[in-house]
Each structure stands twice: as structure tokens, then as C-alpha cells.
View 1 (cartoon, helix red, strand yellow):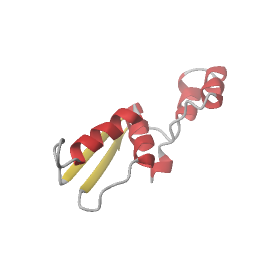
View 2: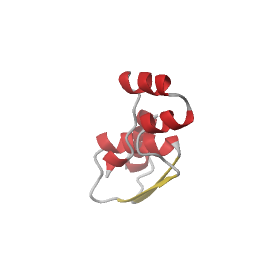
View 3: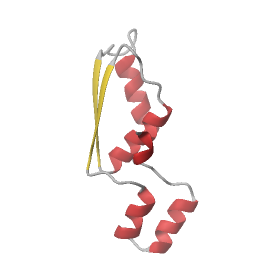
View 4: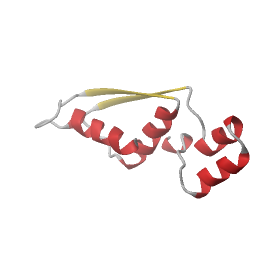
Length: 91
């Protein structure tokens, strides 16, 4: 999902084969906020483009969310298999 988010940003930013946007507003809801955060860790933002990134009802880490909505063994496997999004690290 993060790879798709980065591809979308590249398309919006690209002047030749993309949109060539000067302002980009990104919205991440729930797990989409985690995908957005993961994508932004690796995507270099352009100085000539204005960005706003909004997260709605997201989480601090996917691991902590899994503890609350499933049971601990499943959360343990998710963390140890590196299936982790960390929302707060993107700031």
C-alpha cells in the first residue's frame, strides 16, 4: 500500500507524464494513515510543491492496534514478521 501511495505522489508531482501539481493534499483514514506514514518515510518531498497530509482515526502502531482488536498471539506474529506501520515516526 505504501508503494502505491508513493506511485500516486510521483504521478501528481511529475511535470512531464503526470499532473504537475503545485499543491497536494493527502488523506489517510485508519490503516490508510499507516500506509501514508510509511510512504512518506521514503518519499522525498519537492521544495516547489506545497503539501498537506491529514490522518483520520489512525493508530500509533499496527501492533498495538492488533492487541486491542484481536488477541495477543496474532499481534505477536504481526510484529515479528515485520508487518508494522508506525504512524508517529513520520513526524
